[in-house]
Amino acid sequence: MRILFLGAPGVGKGTQAERVGAALSIPHISTGEMFRRHVGSRTSLGLRIEEILDRGDLVPDVLTVEMMLERLREPDTVNGYILDGFPRNLAQVHALDGAIGDYALDAVLVLEAPNEVLKERILARGRTDDTEASVSNRLDVYERETAPLIHVYRERGLVVKVDGTGEIEEITAKILMALA
Image 1: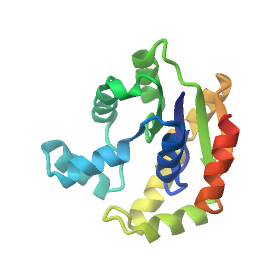
Image 2 (image 1 turned 60 degrees about the vertical axis):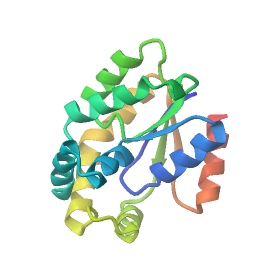
Image 3 (image 1 turned 90 degrees about the horizontal axis):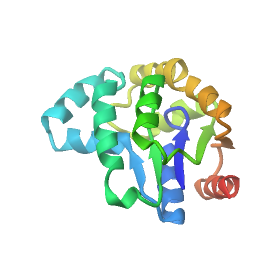
């Protein structure tokens, strides 16, 4: 099963994608984790990414698309995967569509939660790139660039919405039931 997780920053996409991936025995592919790995390793790409994230901006499409398409070619994705953090905008949707061709997405899972809950969760996790200003900026960028993808995928009949508030285990169960 090929699943895309969408939702605002802090909604729990990473946590839930990891749990659902384990339950379905498919890899959880997270752009955020890939970016943090590069930043932590102080690679040249990581230094560029760090500067961008410190401003609260999103990594440019060209870097994200290249990194993700390379990952999707790895053998562990043959039976499916969960994408978390990609695509984030229409240009990335088109890049993904062109790359996966016959391996189209089976579902687009949209996790939802109120903005107040999202801000509280983000600031509580203590990442260096999580400041009041960067959180507000990321939520604005999500509404402007990523939220419109829900409409695109709804037109394709792929959207499954799940309430992202509550206990982690409860949300995982709701997701697995919604995808069944």
